[in-house]
Length: 467
Image (cartoon, one colour):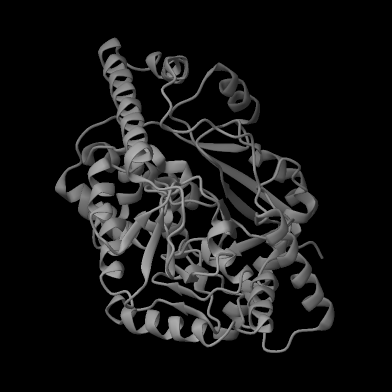
């Protein structure tokens, strides 16, 4: 008896040259049909060739005609998205690309209409998405989950050839279960991994070709990147676009030059300190998942004012967002005697291995994982992927931060926390990952798709158990 083929909707990136279509062959081999969804708003001639070649299997969101939506349109969009505020729903997109409200609302309406058309025409059984919280991803997630269609997000992990597979846009690791008893083989593997990471001073990360720092002024790059858009816009709009981009580059260059030259220090404090790594300013980790901590400088000030006596808060801005931190924001922090700003290029590993480091305070940064490698306690004021473990305090109430910090300081003074506790914590994280990775140059599509299908089975079993 032949079972009907299921259909997976793959949400691609804005660039039609993305390699998402390479998954099609593997899904077909496993008895699945594929539909690949793309934005189709900005592209060049080379991308157009790819679009024409795969048009039969792709679905493209066409650019909307910018016309301010009426009140009844907004009410309908909110109803369809099951959202109390469309402005809140679209905030990540508007904040990331500095878009006007009218523009992002037009895009939202167009994407909602396009996705609803796909869902009415096709029987979708599974949605696969990459990381991020762009408008297309958020709309797809909202409309499909309301129809009880599972979503799987391909996440990055800290282990080579392993990945997180999230089933919600909040990046909560649903498979995470604290390991209470660890097998000898796993203990040795994690111990070796931790020792190797410490020796090399880096956690395994999936790197592509390094991009230039965002604060560099590159006139050639600016002109080249706007040329395609000039073909589809008026000369006046193209001129305004280039002017804004040049202005932004100069602003970022100024911020980086002043902050680096006058406000950042290149030495660690000579007293006990807690480490706070700042997030990239437009990262979805804070624009969506922890939006209440978007203004990081105010969070840092609050923590600094509640430190135990005799300690200091060491703050390191994100190395890939140096030009994004306004000088006035950094001055606001420097003026607090309980805060020291460290240069963004300073190694996190050199910070954590320092004897005066009492622990790490994060929103939901990966620095929490690195802190575990060095047997340093972690306080997360956000979700930290939903990871709970002894010495990892998650979703801590800022009003209670002073008590948490005091507790950690006393623990560290009484002696180093047993290594086995941290090995168990790292093993728990490893056990929550799946084989494969999409954040590497040599992707094994067979392994990745098989892991996606395993995750899909697990989700269906959870649905069945809930009744």
